[in-house]
Every structure is written in structure tokens, then in C-alpha cells.
Length: 403
Image (cartoon, rainbow, N blue to C red; front, top):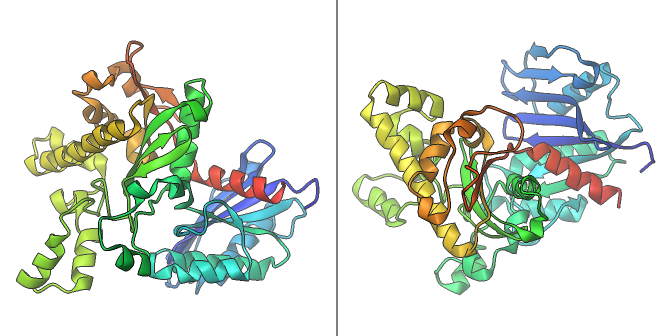
């Protein structure tokens, strides 16, 4: 890597989409951002914003056959702004990889052996790892000479002790099929827990934080001194909090009951719990803004969905307070956590005996900056800390290739 190579391209490849950001690691500035969606359809769309030049967003529609065509289109857009993949200033490409199992505990330079291991984990991440692999292989073909780094969603949670990570099932069966709690959203939990410590003016090693990543997917983590000791998602992203379309925690016997009584297949139950449950299953909406609007109009179904969502949040805040023993802060992040003041207020209401409280005026402030929403007297800080998973991936990537 040359001394002038300070840029990192971050790629997040989904089954039919590619999100990307190009960052300058000298100051973390975003040079370009974009999204390719509906890959493989006639109505594919590419939206690209060249932030380095201050240009307007450019959008194109038309068929993009596959991920290779998508990345070639992205490369062309970047080249049009003088930011092409052939630039000597590009230090590496960082890839978000959802599942790294127990093997990958930190960012890893990708070679053929790493690819094989990511592929070996497809059975425990069938919706995500195949798309991540496609993005990696395509990017490697475009720039085979450039370091490519995998940053794993699960890595931050590999510090969980065995008593938190294991399910109470037969050990031989669990080990044979790699059944354990892995956790997800790890790059977000790592970034937010560290930024929360900065907000408090302390080193991460001194701070215990409960991070609530609340988006359409939602997860909680207990972070002690910068290390994850528990998290709400498990073998898959289905476990834990109530989410936009996922049920979160549920009695496992529900699946057997639905197969016996309702005649549902494994695939039927999978679709039910992952795509037709959570807020959308409870009230037909998974947009918290719409749910709050309906509540304001007296919609009881929306109110019940909100109350169930909040009840689950409170349970995890209480549980992780017990796990940590001492809590310095509760941090809200992601789309709902950062923008839904009523969710934050409701989640912490009645927890004054635990040292938690919300200042209504502070909570009402809209800002893209980390901020406290608790009153001065609160023993435990309540914070809103906007997440930045792309910056976290870029920082981890650059640190590895520049070491």
C-alpha cells in the first residue's frame, strides 16, 4: 500500500442489492455513497451521490443482470467523479459479512481459505452469507491486486462467555451443528459502545453500556469495558427484541404446535416468524412513525403493538442491568432508536429506581450528533448515539491493511 492510499471502499452486498460508500481515512470523510437495488430485475436502480465534488444525486434505472454488472456500474459512477477503483489512492475494499461463526473474531484479509470458511457458514446464514460471498468474489475479480477485508457482524459478540453463548441443549448435538448464540449488528454495537464512552469522557475499558440497536431489525447488547458479554440475537437474527417483521423471543414449542395443529411446513413457519411477525404481524405496520400516528388517532391495535415492543425492551434493559451489575449508560441507536423520541421515553419510563430517567426537552431534540437525553441528576446516562457501520467497517479495514 502506498503512502497516498488512504481511501477505503465499503461494500454491503445483499441478495438483490449493493450498498457502498467510499471514505477517506485521513478524516473519515465520505467521498461518495450509493445503492444498487433490484439486481436481476428489469427495473434495477442505481442511486449515486458524489459528495467529494458536491454534485447532485444521479439515478439511473434499467436492467442490471447480476452483482458483477452492479459493481461494474458502481465503478463507472466512481470513475466519472475521478474516484475510480483503479485510483492509487484506494487502499482496500472492506466487505460487510454477516456471519463469521467462531473462527473470525476480528477483521480478516480475504484469501481463498477465508472464502471457503465463509461458504462453510452458509447453513447458519443462508439469507446473508451467499450474497456477501458474491460481492466479495466480484470485487476481487475487478481488483485482484487490492487487499479485500471481511468485517463480520458476529465478531464483536465472540467475547461472550460460554454460559451466555450456549443454549441449554444436548452439547454433542449443539457442537455437531454449530448451534449457539452468535449475535448480529456487531459493527454497530462496537461503534456505539465506543462512542458512548467518548460521550461520557471516559475510556471504553471503564464503561459498562447497554446498547439498543432499534431499526427494522433490532438487537440489544451488554458491553462491559468494551467487550460484549451478552446480546439478544442468537443463532440467527430472529431471537430477542420485537422487530419490524420478526417475532423475537418465542416459545420454541410454537413451531411444533403450528406444524401439528395448523399443518404448516418448516418454510411456512420460517416465513411467519421472520416476515409476518413483529410489529407488522401485530398491527399491519412496521414503520414506527405510522404506528405512532395510528396511536394518536386512538387505534388500539397499534397501541398494543407498541406496548408489546416496549415491554420487551424493558425486559432486556432489566436483564442486562443484572448481567452487568453496574450500568453507566443506555444508548439508543439505528433508525427507530435515533429518531423515535416516544420509544426512548417509554422504554425508560418507570425505571427511576434503576437510575434511569429521560429529560423531555433533551429527548425531543433532533440531531445527528451523539447526545445525552437524561437529566443531570440521573445515576445512569441515557444517550442517543447515531450508528455508523460503514465508518466502523472502513476504520477496521484501514487499520488492518495499514498496520
